Amino acid sequence: MNGKLQGIIICGVTAACLVGVMAFLNSTSGKSDADSSSSSTAAVSSQDESVVILTKSSDDITSVKVSNEHGEYSVNKSESGKSTWSIPELGTLNANATAEASMISNLDGFKAKKLVEENVEDMSKYGLDKPTADLTVEYSDGTATTLHVGSVSPSNERYSYVSLDDEKTVYMVMGTKLSYYTDPVTAYANLTLLTKPSDDDWPDYGKETVTRKDLDYEMAFENNPNEIEGLSGQVMTEPIFSYLNITNSSATTHGMWGLTAQSCEVIAPDETAMKEHGLSDPFATVRLSGDGYDYTLKIGDPVYATAGDSSETTDTVSAYYCYFEGVKGVDAIYLVSADNLPWATIKAEDVITSLMTSNYLVDLKNVEVVYNGKKTVYEVESSGASTDTDSDGKTTAQVTKVTTDGKELDVDNFKTFYQYLMGCPTNEIYFTDPEGESYLTITFDRKDGKKDVMEIYKDSSRRSVVKLNGETSFRIQSTWVDTFVANMDRLLKGEAVDDNY
Image 1 (cartoon, helix red, strand yellow):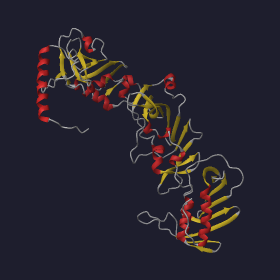
Image 2: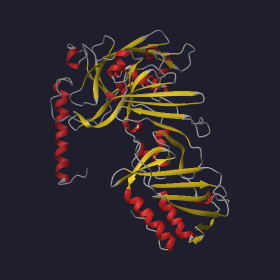
Image 3: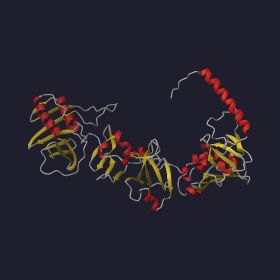
Image 4: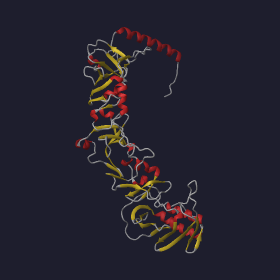
């Protein structure tokens, strides 16, 4: 973006001369803006040529009727006379009150950049013989003015030509001021599909399910039965039970609240419209239900990003067509950014934590390991439980003693051993039940009488399958098991535990 400044004095003098010549030509040629638009260099006037073309106050507006290529609609002041507006053509859709008010206030002292030509004989050269949009502004005194929008100015594409009523005078108006009246009625729909609650008003979490055509399993999320520091308040219950990574999972578990669209596409869609947008048989369906609410989000066909030449690509999805159920005022097909739809791409491995179980060592009575029929039991003694905390919320309980077969082990070395055990890899979920008997079983016995059981089966020379509490859940590298078994021997000998596999 940095330019080179060369010969600034000479260029300045030359530019000033060119501007003077062009200003003279424009003032004496008598040609209209449309006739002279082929000129490659436009004159820049230092004078303000703007002109107010709608002189009445927006406070006096009672209705604005719009007709454009997308259809017809009107924005009407409420019968109470207050500055609230309604658009009948939105039907039951929630309206964007800010957009409605802005549309009206935009007409207050409505200015054109300049007057282009008076007494125009051929309005077609400005596209005003067949306007792209007409808006009729009705006032409380019974008068009305119609503004016609013509073609875009070839000399400056940021502006378009307009005229009033049956007059033959043409003005130039900034395109952004006209977009209110060239847009479809869907531009005035509220794009918030589900309002995000305030921090003190979140509903109790119920259950969320995610089904998708490209997955052979359903994902389900429910409240975490145990409050565990650093983990999400929810857990995955389908296709496996697993704790969730709070950072990676929050958009999936809570993204429904506050979900917004980037545009409204079809109001009150019929079966044909739903089918055309891939919503009669959606690619993905997300249901979130709980006490007092039941929401369903249908995710249909994708919309792909465009390349530099404006052609559609086939490798990057920018948005999806969606339909939302369970909330009043959103009966429409919306286009929602892919960034707001984690359910369209998320997999179970993306959100689960690396912990197969969440047992604090201080809460355990013992850890029992059975490897190829040989049992080893590690007895754990501690000075409290994980629920014992100080004023800063830190656990005050400590492991005081670990023994196996009557032999006391180094506590710190056992903690390292247990840390390796808790880090059993969870990067591949797996559902096919293994054959045969488990060759390694690890049981976590807690002081409260509850327990977790990991059963490990041979799958191949390099892979093993893990059943967690009787459910086939993961497939892991067999080298992890080899290192674990070797660490049992190191622990007994008082050698440092290896945390690599």
